[in-house]
Image (cartoon, rainbow, N blue to C red; front, side, top):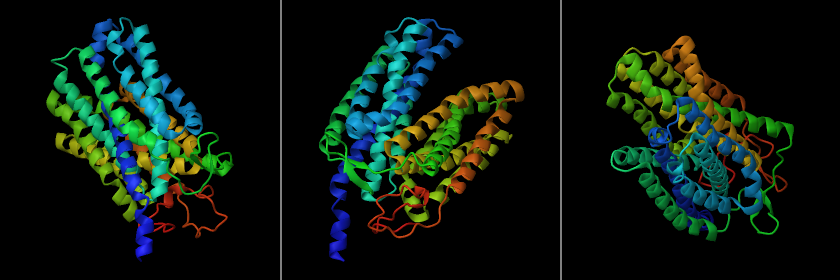
Length: 430
């Protein structure tokens, strides 16, 4: 018994420090991005851009993010997840201070292209590092990292709301840049000094740097199909997150007559429940398993969004938004983690790129549908895609895997969604 206890505790000491460092990077990402978002109206006024010109400028962020997500897997395999995380976090912190220096939509678009490159690369790198750590310590800890991201976003938006009336965009974003560089320096030291986790199924090293790399078979048709399915799950859920962020408050104000403060609180209820649900995500996964959490969560979000979109009472809309946040919270990290377990950094990159595409597609899609059918009906598409995510999650479930043998180096032949390992010991699947 004592030998088993020591074996389980041995990897936890360095893993704890690494987990905290990665959590800081997730929180930093949400904090910096939210800080930029709350200053978009001021930047728009500063450069004298029309709504259409601003939309084109913001496209630079989207293009930079998605393009880099598709390429970041190669960078991570070449240089290591930790190194790419630190480098892109530093670039993100520096580039967030650039938009206030622009004087035209074209300049803003070029600056946001750089910001998007940093944002996309960081999202792939720290998610890949989190997947490796989760496999190394054999605990489903990805939801806790995404809880840190959500908490950072709430803090960034809240601080931005407080500082916006008192600080210029340049002063505010320079403050964010300094805070970001400080966090990167402190957490980056831990990341760069810590040995890369040795995930389950590692059998080799990356040439020239000695870091372990997982043996995967991402070119196998079944593996590619599963990664695509998990990517579509991230797209479906990220669509809802992006659409509700931009249109949820407007629904309360326009369709139910809520005041500005009450309308803004609707999205706050969604974001708060998402953060709390992600904070409890690891315990839920260990107790229930990945498939039940994903399917139930997506189904709950579908019901919640129908309630939020179609209810005539404000308190019911708030309840619907809260249920949607509660349900969607852990679907994205489960899907990204499953794609990473199948395809390594390439799987993470593919799922992240599809997920971010969902965030981009959500707001404009709701806008077009609103013109044709009205905002309440348009918001029901969030519920429809959450239901699709639930069906996909159920479809990619697997039968309990056979006990691993010496020749079984990794989970390439089985969808990892049902291979959440219990902390009581290796090889025990829920």
